Structures are given as C-alpha cells and as structure tokens.
Length: 449
Image 1: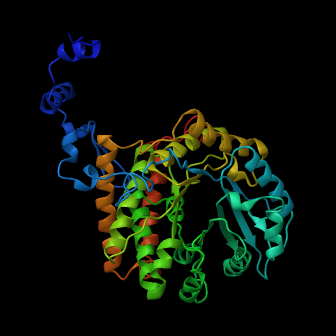
Image 2 (image 1 turned 90 degrees about the horizontal axis):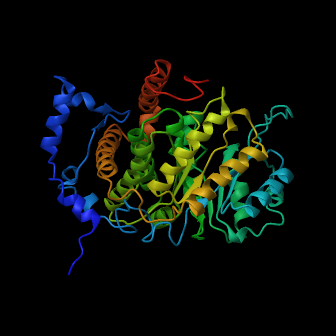
Image 3 (image 1 turned 120 degrees about the vertical axis):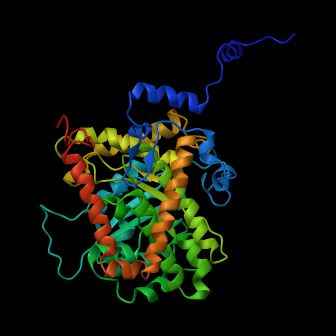
C-alpha cells in the first residue's frame, strides 16, 4: 500500500492556479491601474515583471538545452561547476613597497587566499616620489623588484593575476621577461582598447605588441578584455557586454592569422560586479553566451576565464562599513553567475591602502561563502525562470548594441568618435540622478549616512 505524504495531501487540497487567474486577481487589487504599473524598468531597458513562469522560456532553445561546461557556456565553463574546481579567491595586494607586499601576500596565502593577485605600478621618467601620497600598486623598476614580491613563496601552487598601472608598456616588458621562467598560470590585465578609452592614447604599436605577447606558453594569458572599466564608469550591463564583444572582435581582426588559436587560449575577461543582484548574475551568463556566439562566427570554439571584482562606483566614503553589505551581495552575484575567480574589494579601499582588518573581512567573506555556505555547486541560478529570462533578454539587447558598434566601424572608431564616451556618460548621469532623487537607495550614501 502506498502511503500518501503530507506534501501530496497539501497539493491535493488546492486547485492549480493559472497565470490568467492570478493576473486577474492582481488587476482587481490595483483598482483600475494597469498591470504594467507593477513592471520595473532597469538601466538595461529591460522590464522586470512581478512574476515569471516556464512560459517565459518557450522557444528559447539556448536557455532550455544548455548544459554546464558545453557551448554556449551559459551554465559555466566547467561541467561540474564549482564542485571539483571552486572559484579562486583572488584578493589584490597593492602596497607600494615590495617587501611589505611580500609579507601581506604570505599572510593572505596562509589564511585561505587561493590565487595571487598583484597590482604593479611602474613609474615613468616624470614620476616624483611623494611618500605621503604614493600611487596604489607595488612600485617596481626591474625584474628584481618583481622577484622580491614573491620571495619565499612557491608561486607554482597558485594562479597569478597582475594589473599594471603607470608606464604600462614598460611594465609589459618587465613582466614578460620575468614570466619566462615561471610555470604558474599567469593572467596579465593588458587591454589596449580599454586603456585607449581611459588614458586617451594607445600603447605604441599595440598591434605588434599584441602579437608579441602571444607566448608559446599556454599558461600565460597576456591579453585581457577589461570590461570592469565600463561598469565602474557607470555603464549598464548591456553596454558592458556589448563593449566587451566589440573589444574581442577587434582583437580577432587585429591579431595575425597564425596567432588566432593562441589568442583564444590567452584571452581572459576582467569584469566588475555591481549591486543589481540578479542583473549581475545574468550579465556573466549572457557574456559567456555571446562570447561563444562571436567566436563561432569565425568557425572557432573557445571559452574564456572570467575574473570578477566587486565594483567601486557605489562605495561610500561617508560610512565605509555600509560597503560590507554591498560587497557581500556583489560577491554572491559573481558566485551565482559562475565567475572563475573573484576579488572582493576592501570596504575602505576608497581611502587608499587597506589595513589588515579590511583585508581579513574581504578574504573571510569568500571563504565563508565557499566553505561554510557550501556554494561549491553547479549553476546555482539554473532553473530560475526570472534569471533565465533576463539572461536571454540581456543577451539579445547586448548583441544588438554590439552589431551597432560594428556598423559604425568597430570599437576603436566608436571610441575615437566619442560614441562610447557619450553612451556611458548618459547612463552614468542617469545613475547619479537616481541616487540624488533617492529613486535608488545606497545606504551610507543617500540614506542613513
């Protein structure tokens, strides 16, 4: 005899309710106001509905038939997600003095950090030392300075992420020379196109530089799409994805034909995660879909590692401790979105060099989420009608904007003619206006400061 469970009894006690019946009840409660009154428009120009059902995914084969580890990598780059290969905890070290950076790095690695993440500052001829106002990043002048950062550390046990500041062209030479004798997986955040946008000039002969950087060592990833620049400047998720696609497409058309395979093995994505929790999850998923679609147009296959860092654009100087709330939510978005490595910013990073307390918080936040909250799972966002739907919509809108960029000549021309700057400025001003009017609430900024 079969025993009826309590769950089955509960289901039998209630008739299924269709969407139409539910919608009518809602409309009645609105007392004449349209159902669309409940919709919320995002910065991405996507309408967020009050409810999502499986009907929202009908005819979307990309969403329905996607599996983890398979094209188009919607559900992550690995078949088993974070279960066997958890995301790398990559907290950045940026102390100006190499010896101090070395001690901080040793401390971080002994307490749970699983990747090395260093910011290097390479002074140029015009640089003047001001001990009261040192630029962020470990100051280096030669490869011996880089060696000092890693003194006493078995770097072959960890992937290494390097951000360059100051004289980037000289920094690339130093890092490439140093990297010849290391076996670690090395990720250098060199993106000449994004640097062009932020600095106003291109690295000299960067086309030849790109080809030279494509080393035969597959562990070295010298070319990056730095999409985080756009998020931190105020861009929407749609813009960030579209600009990233345009940059990757520019690389594909700039690299010598014989280096295409090396480019696909070298290229990685350095993105930023904002505080719109579900949209940021969808952003990482949509980005993987469209990157896969883009390379497939060249009859190629590739999946690109995604490194995610919490954004800086929404952090408070008035009440730094409220930043902890945003850091936690942004880290969760990166995890649920399937980032391969994550850097949680320091809650006091806007004041300069972070202290041991803030480093401890950011590091332990990831460790707790990974080990104590058991978030080492496969595609945690999969199956959510809401996230799956906005992923599809975000991918569609981003692809349309990417096509528009290509139609006006590509990313380099779009920057040169000021289109990218104009689009980001408009979206950034919209964000600022929303904060000023308290349409958007940021604790410690425009409320409870």
